[in-house]
Amino acid sequence: MHQDVPNLRFDDRLETTLRQAGDGGIGLAAKWQQLVDLLGQNPSDFDPAVVALGLRKVRQFMDLVPLPVREQCVRALSGRLRSAPLLLLLSGDVPAVAAAAVSGARLSDHEWADIVPHMSTRARGFLRNRGDLGPMTLRALRSCSSADFALSLDRSFTETAVRAPQVVQIRDIVERIEKLRIERERHDAAEIQAGASVEPVVSLGKPIDEIGFETDEYGTISSVEGAPAGAVVGVDIAEPAFDQGPGPDAYGAAAFRQKMPLENARLRLCGAPAIAGDWRINAAPFFEPASGRFKGYRGILRRPNIAEVAHIPEGDTHDAENIQQLLHELRTPLGAIIGFSEIIEQQLFGPVIEEYRTIAASILHDARRLLSGLDDLSTAAKIETGTYVTEVGLTDCDWLSLRLADRLRELSDALHVTLNLVHAHPVRPFALDNQLAERLFSRLLSAVIIGCEPGEVLDGRFRTEPGLNAVNRFVLSLPKKLGDMDEDALFGSGPLDDSHDAPLLGLGFSLRLVRSLARNAGGDLRCYNQALIVSLPAVNDGRAGLMDEER
Image 1: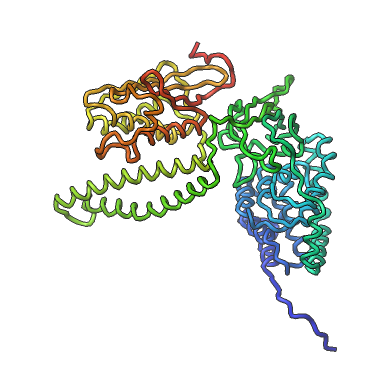
Image 2: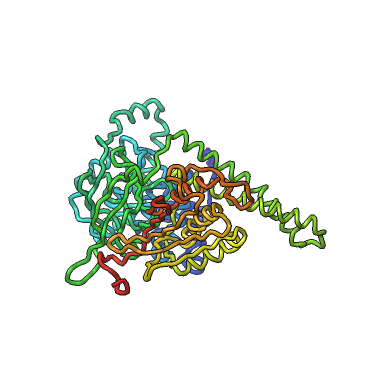
């Protein structure tokens, strides 16, 4: 008996991957990533039974795959994670993976609403920080609010509560979502739009400027004061923010890992307008009195004041992005010019007459100077658009002094300027990355050296002002040509001369760039009493008093 069957296209990629995955073995991490990537794209022609098997394999091998691999794999799926069952599974992982999955998923309003009741409390907290939720999802989150904020966010309870139903109900959830997808494809687009407009998106009232908070030992905010709990609870301060999601900067995350006080660390919140945007964290770790066991952080979130952030119109942000694109396009031919100049100047392809080598050396000098200027413009544009990231690290003052003396020796010798760098003992290390510290101080010193007359002496002195928020200060004397200028004139000045060593964009731009770099790292640059004073955060051991050597 002949029976007509529809013309179907079978996609066996998932079955093939499952056969290769087997029960583990060599290359388990790679097989797990391949399986997650395939399931995340949610092809409509996969058999739900095979999808359920794949999800069970993902769960089975999850704990065997190193955390950095899992986190990197999920982050790479950002914008492509369209499988609700897979998202539900990944949201039960550790906070770093769960946050990346929830913030990077692209589900419909119906799909979000369908899985919200099955998500963990922490995962729903991450979801509340998204600013693109539909009315059905918001309604589902509100229905869970009483349970979320009445129960203690104990880690063992949370993981037990979320992972048990995932193993049992994965097949059921896959089938339910597949049925919903088929049914909704039959609906008219106008009906879907009408259903979506039943309940408007709810936003909080007036903006909030300060929030008291407490985290658990894993860095997840578990309770707040001064803001609706659903807007902030669930945010993780232990891992840096990814893409446009909520979270701290790298400095804040590093301080958490080291159990150090958080002093004006940056934090981004998402969601309702009342809490969305940039914040500063001031918090300290707390410990269990009897055992000394680390319990989490307590502190406040506050909005940055006008001196801590540069507010620029949206049009200026677009201009800054255009500048970045232009600079990227200029670097390519400039790199080629530098490469060919080095070939001629160093005679890499054979002998070159002295005249051509001299010309090549001059071109090389100008090209490198131009490249340095492009780097400064790029940095300034990133700072203005808020995309410049300050790397966390430690910079020893002795190391920094030697590096600066070495780097600036040729320039100071050429201009017959003496640079004395000294420091009071002891000076704490700077709480910032070596590369940033060297760049900041070398830009400052080279710009000021250019303003010296032959034979002048510049004195620079490092010292530490200890305390709960310890600060390192660097006081640099100004040359005669600049000594009588006030701060506005100094920071607004143009090129001091037309020499090849002068800053390409002028003294004022160099000083403003250094000030922006310092402020981005939690410090400042000011002009006072014929001197420039750089203030930057110093390493702090968490005590308000002096270190032993400082006593």
